[in-house]
Image (cartoon, rainbow, N blue to C red):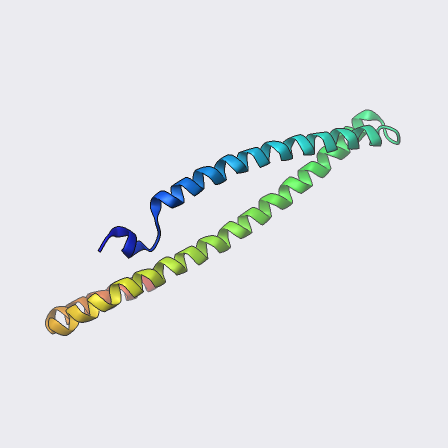
Length: 130
């Protein structure tokens, strides 16, 4: 059985798609920076009609800071959820892959299985206490 069959995905395909996604994300990021810069400049020009230029610049910078902070918080929340979901999927995949051979081995070697179970329970209990 190949590593691809055990893991369940094609590494080369994921690498190619990752490179394409990275290039496209770079183009999008550059376009967004240009758009945000133009909007900030337009906003500052519009605000100078009502406020002094230095106050208008502070208002635009404050709004940009608030948007950046909200985006950073959203990013952290999404990444935390994604990390938990990936960890769950990896654990489920490991159990689905390793459980049948482990059960077969345990049925053939009962004494060894008893020692392994006892060691596993001991490690689990020690980890839960700390």
